[in-house]
Length: 336
Image (tube, rainbow, N blue to C red):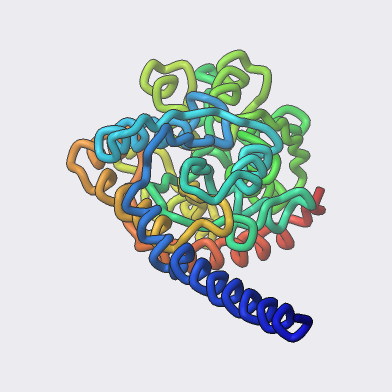
């Protein structure tokens, strides 16, 4: 009887083990198969674009252009949410902590590469996020109130009262902030004080209201005010003069031939997002950006459309982090 019981337990154990193996076999799928299935079904609900700056800035403008067209292409709503703060760090952290399922996309600027080196709270755009696609870029410009008599940045600085100026930007560590710091620190006898804001729109208000002397910003952000004559552009940080600002000298003309600063707009997703899904998002965004209407809208507001594959953009972001780390050291700014 004991032998029969032992034999029965043994047979049951073998049977259970066999069933267990069989169950695992029929219930599990290769990782690539699951990823492909998820990508094929994506999206099945609303996609959020988290813009790291306030409404009205270049990141917000590009996000809304792309989001509107992605809604039509993907068949699901793509909504824009502004999560401004800390020079773009707040929005980046929101996305870095989100589920890696493609339903939360960060839209940010060059500031994410800057913050990786300039802030202890900065989010590493390659390690803590996954680069997806670049949309466009635009050079930094220096603007002043319409009442300004000077036509270029150097004359303005030379004539500044007591050699003191205040300048605004869309936040500490943004490309515009660092470009201005580099310029002013290179000019002897000038004491420049930075006044940071949470995005480009409040910078416009500060300039028009003359709460600051100058601002380092971008053309798309300042364009409406420049067209209506309530502010004046004094310099552009590009290799050649902008088509939309043909009378405004470049920083190279002002004695800074090596300083070419452009603010780019990029899309990122949380780390761990499947490569297939990242590639799909890159392809969809590039399709939108390649549409004639999209390119015209971007160029009209002073943006230069860009098309890069996902690996190309990831490589570009890495290079940007290195470039801005060098510029930060040159300005002497201490990481905050």
